[in-house]
Length: 386
Image (cartoon, rainbow, N blue to C red):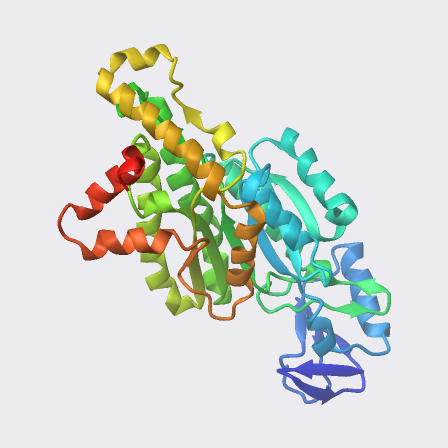
């Protein structure tokens, strides 16, 4: 038998099973003191315990060093029914080396067919689709528990000490703990229109999804990450979280708040070896605009606002159409940035998916007068003056 500990091979003749009356122990016969290659197990309350233990005791050999490579990086992604979340889930689940175990979540499972069609038969090995509503705390906790359940070992070992192993034909990879958990907070919604016409319920919904939904998701998985002293949190940010956009006051407020929350967490979680990254996106060709709650020009609610606001809103909609036609990125462009952040051993705090964001943001920070406000106003409402 070959057993690896901390990268070094340990020579062992076999494993012996000892019963101390309370717990069964798988012991390394290397010495009389229980070493790190020995594990306590609860009594054989189930057939599963017996089957696994029998396999352990009758095996010829196994190599923990090689077996450790079987471990998958566990990735939770919210908002996977379309857009960035769907594309990222497909890309990770399609990894030829099966590096990732993806838990793609969505509020409405009736929309999962699009995702399943994209990954074809891969979902059995690398993808699970879970129902999760980021505005419902219990829904988040249920999804978290399902993920942890699938990764918990049945031997009763401390889940943060386990390694995945295969013994003969007995695959115990399902017994492993989360070696590295990635929480990708991607779910988001928009609200566009004059502030005067927005209902309190509409504004509250934006904050519940974009802000509280993200925070609640992080909150649910943070204890496990801290316990393991490792983890990654990736949040789909927006240029609307870095500079204000007219007629998007509540949306921008939610995204500005996310910037502050993530920055605050990043400073703290550095001490736990947990990295926080914001993926700052501009316009992207997704269903976001289709799903966007937008006040249409012919909507009777616009009668509540003055004619100048109506005129400016019409100009803003023209600006949006132009931007999406000429500058919108494909989801695959965004996914590449996510992959850079996921695969980097030392991920950055902020990633910009295009080169248009930083100059405007820099102008905002470096110019204390109203030059930034004036520039944004001209860009949006008077492009012919540029």
